Length: 194
Image (cartoon, rainbow, N blue to C red; front, side, top):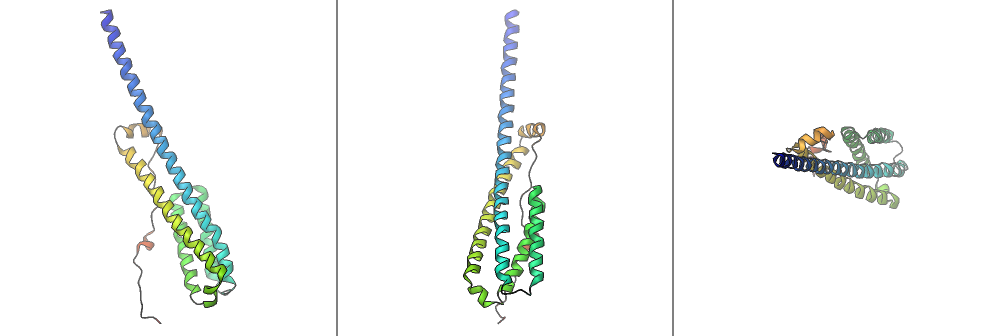
């Protein structure tokens, strides 16, 4: 009977070691996924900050030509402030809202630029416009990378038995960085205006 007791104890010990190893493996994977998301989010913020830093130069260049457009400049300053505040708190939804507000304000600024042909030919302005366009592309890629990592984590923590480990480790799903509803609307194009 003594040999049978040791066998049962050995089997229980092996099962316990396997269970702990599996738990540790899943826990470590979740931590890696969570950290990947933090990294991707930092890249989104980095590109948003790059755009935020370019905008004052763009605004100053445009002000030289269109100094009477003060409401547009105020809207841009307010939107930049809102985006910076949301970025400092790490609030994905707040960053989405601030980004949408800033994108809208920039669209109005670019609309005004159409009224100033000399500005459109200014080398400093053209350079800033190219930098801004490149940054917008970088933001798009960073958002896509972030959302991809969020998808991986969110899918992982919904699976069994990973969901149990996620609850124990307090790893929660993350929000996607989504485009606001007004950006999803199809723009109206009218070639009849002259």
